[in-house]
Length: 348
Ligand SMILES: [Zn+2]
Image (cartoon, rainbow, N blue to C red; front, side):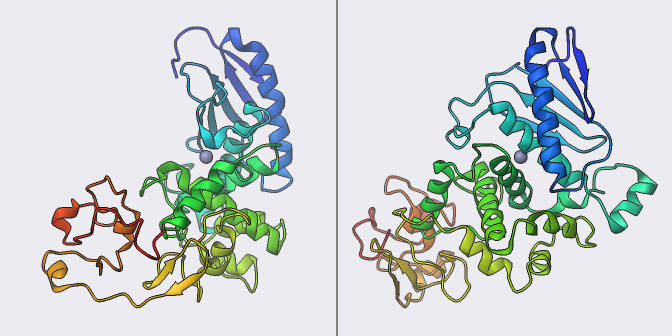
């Protein structure tokens, strides 16, 4: 954001809102939205320390927001409403949605307990001493997306686009697990932690009660090994496990045509060799033939044949020369797949 030129600051109970003079009306609206979001979030999560600096900008034609909690809590918001981002198109007020989302990050990431609080007493608000920063991106972005949907009349938990992202992954037999629902691993790249994380938390709150989400944040804020998630899910929702609740929460909505079976035996969808999807939605188990000697000799790490392609080849677009699993040219991977798999029985 361009810092040159005149700027003004609006002081509210919990914010300093920085804006250019031409945007005074927007800043006044943002002040109301920020305090509204703060009051709603403070009813759920522990309030952050200190005043939050919120900078309102309009330098680029992009809709986004950024948050950091060190050295102090700071939010930057681009005032441009979303026009081309499919996931963000479901909103009532752009400022309300983005402010609630970014402020959730402040509430979440600023929260520090136990040994982390003691370390901050000595070293200050140093990077690396905020335990929730170590949480997986689906937990961080999922929480913000969950609350943006809960405290506005829009939000991406309700958006049809995220439903389709999950359904597309499931149709390809490539649904994410908590270990790979992360940023920029493969399509849908940056959308993944938002889509999976928020659906998981929404589902968990549905079966274990709304208070499970704030209790989860409190639990992760003081744990010695800060990137743990599953242990704290089991602690705040007795009798429930991350593995089973994840599958429940990230299934496509009823009525979608993803046509994928639920995972069996508590495993992640698509991760079990031999479980194949069919258009009818029923599951059929087929014993996967062992990798051919040729494929092993050429370094193909996945057992794969024309009758039973590996996940990468099954997802591979017919026109693409690259195996999605191995990231190598198909001709050199040893997979030896025919150009089209859509006609093979049992492939989605
Ligand atoms: Zn975010």
